[in-house]
Image (cartoon, rainbow, N blue to C red; front, side, top):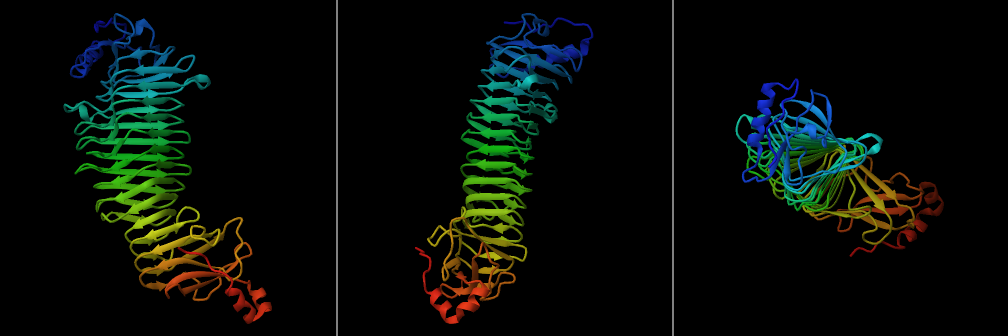
Length: 492
């Protein structure tokens, strides 16, 4: 067992020494059997080597069976690594604020057990000179949360990863803000990266806890391959992806607990969230997308509760299915929406609905309302189903706003080709702005289309390829009538 009795250093106050010892005495988790080593720093702002025996209590740096403790009261300092140490545990507490950096080359610091930040501990991981990197490999539970007894749980505790540094969490739970009333944070920026591939990732796990995640800047990445990802498991959680940051995940739940709330903000050019599976909204879960951001949901976005919401203010949302049957809100006031299926009523108040996946079909189980500031974007790449955009509306349709048509490269419609772009099971009211029955759309790459709201079974919207006005005058009406009979798309 390595002794925790420190060697008193000049300028190290008795009060600070007692505080560090007290933190060490209480910091081990129940049942923790590892030896412990306590790190001592020079005055605030100084730098010391992790491998320097003089930086630790008697016995020197912690070994593979030891837990490394950083418990220096309310002090910010730098710890440089010139080797790849392996410890059984890492504990940062008592408002200690160390910055880990590589010194001379790339560093891998491996923790085989629990990594715990508590009682105001703040850890910063950064890169070194010449592009060297710091990689913290955590093979056990990773906990960013103040201790449970009051008032320690009110001390904000957090981790910052930047400058190409990385956390690779491989097993156990990754938790930000665990105990009642605790405040925890994770800040990824400046090309920092956190990969969580353990059992579960949970933000704000208990009631009244507050967890926040921020991913900022191009090449700053939070990647989650853990099978469980809860944002706001029982407390309040905020996730912000901005200025080019990226979040990668599989299946995600927002606001799982009875009193929990969670908000995910994805904003700024090149900011992105790729969720390859389902995204389930519980309680007060909210997703806000704006300003050039991209969100992709490979499965179903299930707005399962009345207080849940997706707000598309800008950017692009792509989802296989969006389900409002549970009563959640879909606020569509800007940006571009791609979805194969929308369950419930959809109101387009100011965005662009682009059916399917360029081109494709969107099925709306309810009604569709397009207001004056909304737009419908239709792409044409052929006559077969799936080669041009279609909107299948199983309820009523109320139209206003803009219709835009784009003929994709490689396709040239023939005169008389028809495209049923809206198939409406219910009633149709209104029309696209400036496009009365029989009106001509602006020419697109030499193609001219005429619109009708009387197609199909009498209330569907159909586009017909027609000659441009000058050509029509030369052909005469009789010749044009024959052209219209040439061919129509195959719809199955």
